[in-house]
Each structure stands twice: as C-alpha cells, then as structure tokens.
Image 1: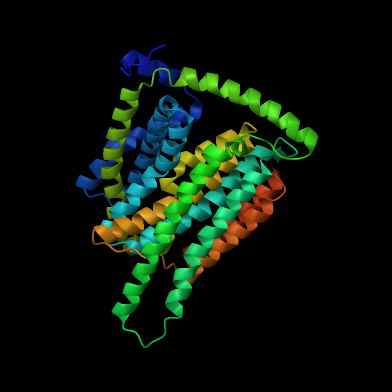
Image 2: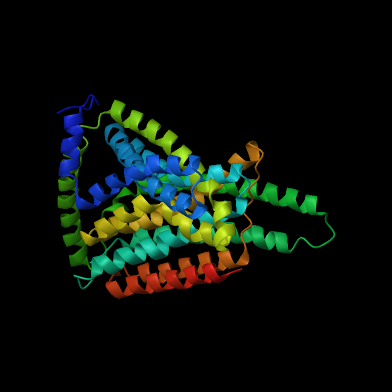
Length: 398
C-alpha cells in the first residue's frame, strides 16, 4: 500500500479512469482555471469573466476537499474531524476575505446569509427530494438534528441582536459613536460564536460522536439502523482506505497548499468582476452575494450532500448540509469579523432586516421538517419551494 505521497502520471490517470461520472465532469472544469486568467488579462466582459471564474472555483474546491479528507484519514478521527470542519468552507472564507479587502462588506454579509439559507433550504431540500424519490422515507438521527437546529437558533440570535442593538441606540449619539459600539458588540459576539464552535466540535466529534451515525425512529428501526450503520461504516472505512492509499501526507499537503494559492487568484478575479457585473446587468450586490457567490463557494460540498442522500445516507447528508451552515455562522463569520478588525477592513454583524427574516424563516422550516427524524421527497420539495421564493425576492429587491 503506497503511503509516500509520490504520484506518477500513470497513477493519476488510473485514478481519473476509476472515478465517477460526476467526478470526471468536475475534473473537466479545471479547463476553466487557465481560462479565468485569460479572461482577466484579455478583459472579457464582466459577465463572462464572473461565470468563467465561478466555474473554475468549483473543481478547486473539490480538490481541496479531497486533500483535507486525506489528511484527516492520516491524522485520525479526532484531528481529522477538526480538519474537515475547519477547512470545509475554506473557499468561501478566501472569497469573502478578498471581497472584504476590496471594500465589499455588503457582498460578504450577503454571502454569509446566502450560505446559511442555501445549505439548509436548497442543499438539504434537494437531498431530501432526490433521495426520497425512490423511497417512502429516509431516516436520520433526530437527536443530532435537534442539536444542530438548536445551534442554528443560537446563530439566529447572534445575528438578530446587533440589528436590534443598532435600531435602539437612539439619535443622541454620533454616527461614529454608534459605529464604534456596533464594532465592539460584533467583536464580542464573534468571540462567543467561536467558543460555541469549539464546543460544537467537542460535542459532535468527542462526547456525542454516535449522533452522526446512529439512526432514529422506533426501537426496532433504531436497532436495525445501528446494525446497518455499523456495516456501512465498515464498508466506508474499507473504501476510504483504498481510496486514500495513494494520498500520502506529502501529496495531500502539497495539493492543499497549491490549491489554496490558485483559488486565491481565481477568487480575486471572481470578486473583481462583481462590481462591473452589477452595473452592467443591474443586479444588486445583495442578490449576487446571497445567491451566486454563496452557491459558488459551496458547490462541491452541495454535490456531495446530494450524492450521499441518493445512496440512502440521509444522516450524512443532514450533517453536511446543516453542518456547513453551522460552520458559516460559527466559524467563517467570526473569523471574517476579526480579519476585518486586524487588517483595517471592518465588518460588523449587523444584517439587514430582509436578510434576518430570511435566515430566521429558513431555520424555522428546517426545524419543523427535521423534528420527526425522517424525510421524504415532499418535504424536500417544500424546502426547495421556500428557497425559490426567497431567491426571487432577493433578485427583485432593489
């Protein structure tokens, strides 16, 4: 079994040949990476530049995910879970940092909103819909889903409070004083969210790690689900061992570093085309951030959630979709607040009322859908309908 990380061309070709059709399509998207640089230097129209760069981000995000999984495999379950959780939204974080340095804080906040809404409505809805088409229902762990839903409710509180705080300051304070107070509150809230993120990792990866594998339902269903989950876990470990046997630590680290650098340049091209794009097409930064940037930053992860749901692994799909939203709210957003503070590009946690209502409404409907520990195609359709309503509203919002 090869562990060195030295990879030959023949080995890469063999891996490509043995990959799934979806993986081959994503690998074909690497053609858009050099094309993105061509579009930048030849000054293509903003619309073409934006979508070429967007398509270039998708395969890089997938490659970063594979490299992170390989490192997690070698590091063991504890550190591995931490690596997956931390780097799960690396592309989204890089895009947001670049947008922040370019003076686009509203796009950054809109992408945070869009990532939260997109994961718990669009991704989870599509997973439930496609996964449930050929089945009467799919089971997932109700306790784990409830814990995640409670954490999402805490995220909603953390985003609502700064908006209410600002609205109730009164008019006797100067604008500068109000901004300073809001910045201080945002920093404190960001710090608390990061502490809650650490607690979340301990809860799901250490003290209650069984919640990510154990099925819920009746006692008979639960026992059957446990036996099935154990068998699937053993099979999955065997598949993972075979799959990452050619991914040594050296290969994974080098791949992750190179992909991070490349995605940084591509993201800079992507973000640089946003302002010209909004002026050319008349789109708002709110719509671009909430819908387009959010979908692009999480595209590879979205496909993974839908794929595992279609394989009747709804518990894993739930963990990916809701877990990604939790990472955005409890890790990405706080890190961006501190990044902006230390590098002179302040970002506060005051979101617009329309964004807040959309987030709260999304969390409420997901709580209702996930409360019984099972899903079906109709519930997935309801989540997709909710996302479509919100997306259209953001598109029409001036």
